[in-house]
Image: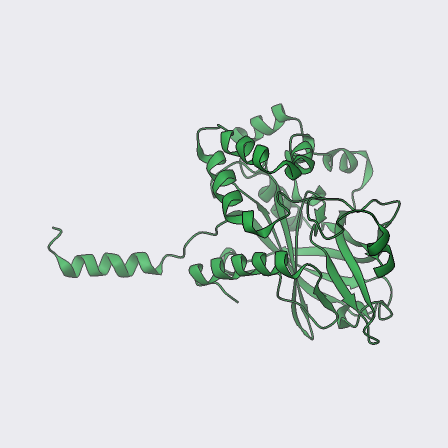
Length: 323
């Protein structure tokens, strides 16, 4: 049978048509919605979609699990992605966030090791030796580990999940004045139930849901949209001026460190509503990348965001989904 070269050629053609899976964020759901700013921000940035409160900007949002395989439970302990694409008149702007305010690493050179260690830790029959060995080699990760092993690391609904940009961006206005920016998506929860659900769930409930309803986060969001119970999120920013950055006393560009709210309080700048689920084929073909920027928004840490951008785009090229 192995000498049937025509058959082998057909199998090869069949396999080449199957898209490769994502390196990270394999399991998720993509939805469409609209965003509008609360006020004009033209004094801070020349990004057109933030200049006019009457202007609505279409968005495409992908919620995902960072390290899990496509068939794993949504509620299992992990960080979760919250990627938003703004379809603006200046082009697409991709804002990549996840549900923790800090990241695993501060140096982009450790990214390949991080993926190898953490993704293998999820596959080895529940063993997490890779995670802890990576933590011992990168002590700056302790900030994330403390949050990951709280109830914040086990969730059951994307409708009540926060999203943090973690990385630092620059806003530039018409006068070329620059501000350092970090973003947060804040779910607008209603009542005590919403406030409780945004805290995450206990480890015991997360384990139960992983067996009883492994797609709990995806199905919860899809059902809410189908029933017309539309989720809302406020976009908030922390703003740091250049003189504050010089005097803050810490590495304000590090993705493993928080900006103290006393120094840089969150400012509410806009609101997003999700409206309908995107077709699976369309959602899975999307490639979100940090370099999808618009005029008025730039990288602050070029080295880190440049490497992350290359990783996302190369993964998209490998999957034939770079668009």
